[in-house]
Length: 342
Ligand SMILES: [Zn+2]
Image (cartoon, rainbow, N blue to C red; front, top):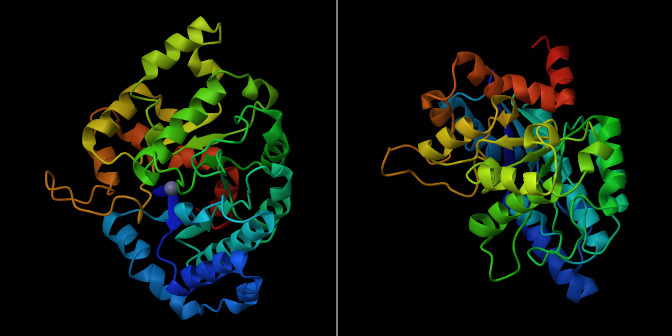
């Protein structure tokens, strides 16, 4: 089977966005503040939003199951306070759970956390627990920069984050390190902030001994790892100068890269530089880049084509990228599949 480890609910019914606008309006005028119960979205509306979009494209492109989380750019953890994020995360996670219930063979959830700048990440644990225990989610998205482009939180290697890591280890769930929208005009959200954050997260891990403290902690760095694979020599050289172990031992038992790289040469490079055991299939469909590449005639985010076409992966390696690695990095997903006889 083909598992796409990176999909967001970017096509949720308009009522969700309207509710969020109302919530933001309520920050200025509390009389406008909506209750969570004011949001009404029927199962039929959810079905329609998925069947004509993500599920249609999954069938056309031949992927089977998507690890599905709330829309990343809408997490916008910088808006309001913890209570704002808490209500918003609960609503968004519940919608992803309902999608996973409506299409259990095709979607399984990953949680957005109710992060808020300056708030102890411990505050996210109840929502994390709820999503794992009640919703059967298999991962979380962890935003290393809840300020939205101003980087006011400590690095991921800081003890600030350790309570979350302890929970991740306890539940055996990985985190996709995923920022949200940029509210810093210097950084375009999907073109700069996302890729900057991917690179930054990797370097924060490299300079630290985080995985000595948490040998089983796992991070998936999306968007092909930002600049990491392209500059692997730089990172190896920096690690060497810092007297760190070689990167394979220092980081690659814990860090994985997805394949959200939207052209063949990028995937060829990823597969050549990064060991195959550390590459997970993903498309982030329907996401940041929705057009058709005039050079190929295919959608940029139809990433399965690049995996199939690269000469860097043989059949066994492709199986790891499409399925085997995801089952290893997301053990709760593996258990859910085994329970279905898959
Ligand atoms: Zn994403």
